[in-house]
Amino acid sequence: MAQFSKNTDDSELWRLFREGDEDAYTTMANRYYAKLIHYGQKFTSDRQIVEDALQDVLVRLWVSRRTLNDTPSVKFYLLKAFRHQLFKAMQNFPRNPTIQVDTQEYNMEFSVEDHYIQQETEVNVRNEVDERLAHLPLRQREVIYLRYFQSLTIEEIADILTIRPQSVSNLVQRALAKLRESWPIILILILDFLSK
Image (cartoon, rainbow, N blue to C red; front, top):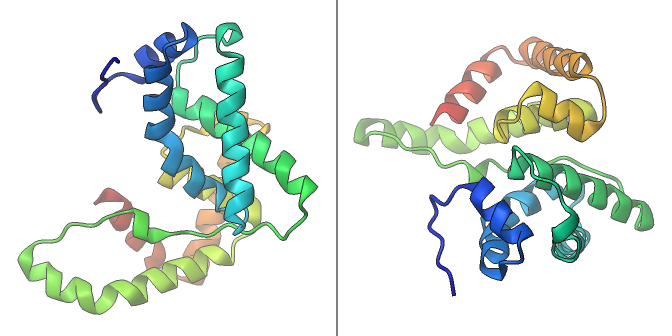
């Protein structure tokens, strides 16, 4: 049984997985499972649909591994495949899609002096950020999530959403403008929040 470290490169795992290495496949699936589940829950609160869609993607990957091409970004490939499968699954189980921002995933570290202040304000700030993001249209929330919480490029987001890169840039700019209008300090908080 091969052992892979956290530092094993995605491209190496992908290559070994395509050659039939089950350990590489398992390591890759484990590496992205929680991130993909979190991403899926931005569209529906039905965890079962999210998990089923992800399982379908992972099974299909294994079955078709020998016919898959090399990819410059495993994360991007998995996000795109999962999004497609999730939307397909959601059509079979119509629900109101919702994007939720779970700020608990992003851990912040503070100095001892800042810790006391952070405890007093963290809940209020998170609630305010969530509320402001919830007022954005669905597409704008999605591009903000992909851009700032998943660190994807404009081109990668365009490919996932099957729209032009300029459209993604426009959506990001409109979303940031709306956030600026509704609460100017939100941008500072989001950027500070993401930099930790």
